[in-house]
Image (cartoon, rainbow, N blue to C red; front, side, top):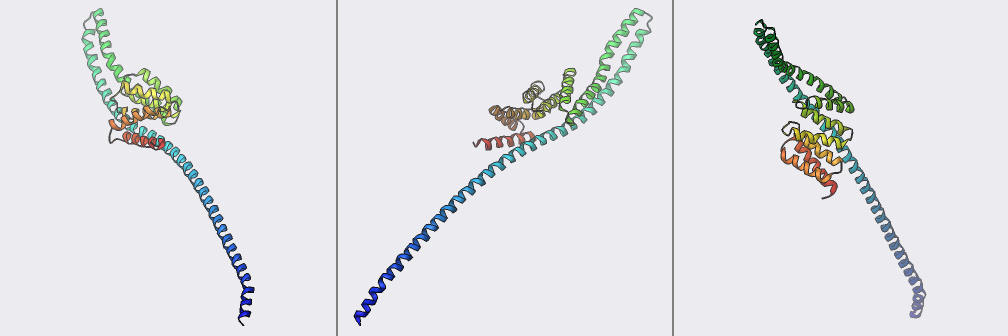
Length: 274
């Protein structure tokens, strides 16, 4: 009986061993397949991450470009509305000055009458000439503001319409005719803007710097200094632009130009990674 059992076990052992070997091979195959799947999954994840990073970088570039365009539009709109308010105030002041000058002319005419009534033709002519000379400057002063305002309005209307070439021509003409006029700083600023809008950054920079040099106390000085920084950026003068924008933020704290300068400085810092 014991011999029969032993014989049966001997015959069964090879089959059991073969089943064990097959089971082990299957397990190894499964492990290899799992490892391969993990490798493929890991590679796929890496590829996906790289694609996502590329898309994020592309979107960041598009966002920066849109921010730049929006900033340019905001700057133009802000400057235009600020100038309109200032121009209305100047028109009212010019009207009051013209009225005062017109009121002074009758006095000059009254002063000339006694000389004309003296009966001496030579003396009368001299007195008339003096009266005309004395009264000529007030008359010219009364006429010049109106003529200057009209010339300025033509130039400003052109830049509002987007006719930058015409605007630059008209503002240059205004500055040549009225270099010391109250609107000369505004004309220099908008002359710079007309060049900036047409990407003529070197000439725009020159116009803004000229305004700051000749009219440092002008209400347009803060905007002009900010645009100096912008123009320097466009000309790839990054170090100079940083210094200018830092000066704007320090010199005009709490103002819109200071806020714009700080925003541009932050953008430069992000772009440089420093």
